[in-house]
Image (cartoon, rainbow, N blue to C red; front, side):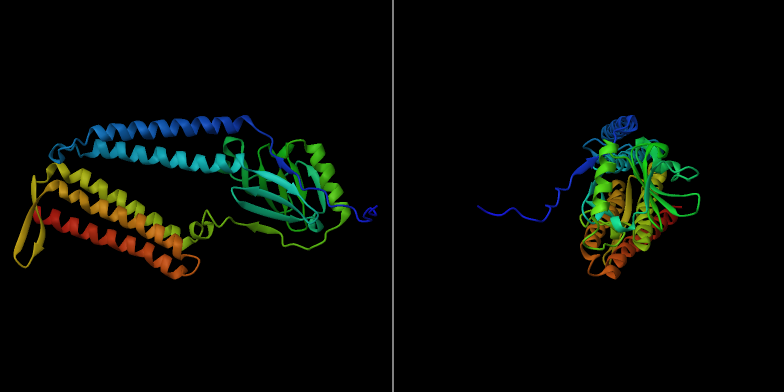
Length: 317
């Protein structure tokens, strides 16, 4: 008969879901509303562009509709990320750490760094309002003594569990709070086996390093703004343009084209933005400089397109 082990078996790590708040459902309504508004604007624009390009209705009214569609889809995208972060937010405790997870990201709080756990943080400053929308409290606040307060909660700060370390504090909102506290204290009492570093581990699949790189997102944002402005200038001047334009020059002379061929210019620039974005995502980890140069190229091409359009308009005066 085998002898029983004299060592205590390590308990299976349990994953704790968050408290569900009504704010998450309000976020879902906003998400659906933004999608519906964006789709309605898209369908309206679709009707303004029949199969015959000479009949396209290009003007400031449809450009405003285009901006509304972009804004609605941007809101839907932002709310999607926020809701997905809230719905996937979990907490788990093992022998060494408290692990906060969402969308493939992890924040590690070593148990040997935990000084105390309390409910609420009187006098603390929560993150700015935008990071507390739709029942999901995320981002960085500050304690009364100036230490950073990292929020990963779906409950108000006064109802959240606040975990204090020597350098920071963390607000969380696990479901079945008493059971979570009991397990956390049991794990702390066992002592850690392996010291860990306190901090965040970003998901590789969402390319956070790329999106959070300041030169990258500044150049990418600038190229997107320039593309929208290019569409706006065309919408503003399109009705005053002749139905045919001298668009190409070569050694044999000019080539007259229908004015709708002008729309190829912002479309090519938009395709360049998307192509350089995808290529930059692939290159970033190995060649950060190359990824930045690709986004810079998108900006430069837009400046060349603006110069060409300006020359065309000046020649028509």
